[in-house]
Image (cartoon, rainbow, N blue to C red; front, side):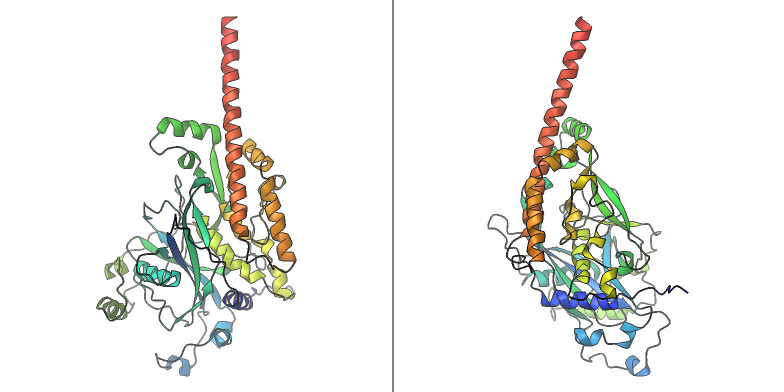
Length: 444
């Protein structure tokens, strides 16, 4: 009889978090011309199965008991109980910051798809570093205090450069930090108005067992990124000549945190009063407890794309690393994290297997000839990808010293810019020839 038991992700998660903790991130220094930085929090928890009964000793443990270490955490009974489910926290903002331009929220111009992101935001004056920024922004946005003993900082993923359209100008450097919830019960939260929390099981994001992630696409109006905002005629012309850009997206089922009257509001009041009275860091809150009584919106499918997808794939890629060759590793490889059509179209937009997160920033255009010319001018990009993969196969001695991600993005978007120029010139020549032929026919 076939084994239909769902494979557990706990060993893969343990290996990933230990790998993140032991691997120094690639830190990108901000240039003097653009010192802006930002940070986000990737918060992971393990949800015990509903049928799990905690021993009486665990239920009576004091609140000030020392938190377990990372190795001890993955030895806990409730973590290894059959049916325990690792989850990753996403948020959905009903009204993203208009000044954000979609860079941190995961949205973008001319898109209407419901999307999710990670809590976080821009570094402000007085922040002690990226880690402090991520923790402060998480508290301000959703009321979750990552400084509590129920949470531990795992480490930092590689910094990411946020650029303007087609990578022409650096806007800021983004630092993602990974946190793990050490307790089986999530502390009460107080999200800002218009912010919904979604704990998404990692099984919906990974090709584990018979389950496969649902890949889709988000279409972005290319004219919104290439033409001046207030030039309607030019934007219509660009839309006609170039079409849309399509970015890969993961479709994830919504799993909102529904706050009920049974939530211990006194715990939230006490924590907020302690922090805002001066006994703790002066943090601004953007909401009130009235959000606890709001009726939840009807569920809808959400899309994970853009920067949020890239950081998620960076996290998941650690689950496919290591020296093990056992059955768990055979179930998950870095190439399995890529969309099914990542290598289609003759490899025009081939993403290096060593960095599946790059798929989140490589668009395809709705007109095939644009993609063709990108491939024609993508020789330098393909050379960077080959050098990157050769470095990793050789032991990765150069992997931390060379900004392979930045080099790949720079050369790729240089090819995109050249392709668009050629396409526009050819379109203009075609229109001119058509007008001349039409005039000749009329005059003849």
